[in-house]
Image (cartoon, rainbow, N blue to C red; front, side, top):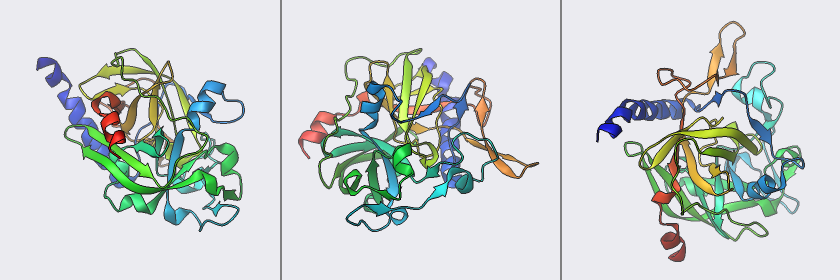
Length: 298
């Protein structure tokens, strides 16, 4: 009990920051150097294969009506959407998504529960696979990469208990993609190396390297992953390429530059519990969910 109480102020602080962040549309940040890299032809084969099972969740209103050759989509740059200052990473890339997630069975995906606040929100979003840099530069998103929600199999979002996940059945199986493997054999421990794949701020898919687990609690762990709004739901991997957790919560990721009247991405040398920006981010551990039971009764 004493050990849990020691972390209570930090947990409460993170919960409050998450609520504040969602009201403003910003959360999470960069620790140390920016370790995010584009998913591209130069990505290591193992990472590239994992990325194929990661989707970018997109509001249906941001996609044009599907045609024979694909969906038109809003072509807004990162810099314009978030009012970024000059020279911020990826500022000229297009942004589209509002959350991330991943495939665990041919027609079943997982994301953060807060990404789908109501049962109706599932039908208002599309699940876009292979939204990498090359795809974002095209005129259309291929229809074969766009999936719809058939039903929410299970969803839990309780900030007081730090529970945050949703399991969704898609309208059809995702063809040619291997579902991700979830780690069920070994619990996360402090110091474990981790990495993440997702769509930070709705950008084309990025892999965030060089992170580690800082602290572990019952159903979550704290890490120094470079993460942002719309990374929510991203799979967090261990060094073996298994999914350990879902990214769910973090501190503010943009800071207003009064002099230049633009937003700068927050960069933290290290985690700082007393900071509004550098407190770290939380991931919900997947060993808390009985996926086999949920998937078999689908």
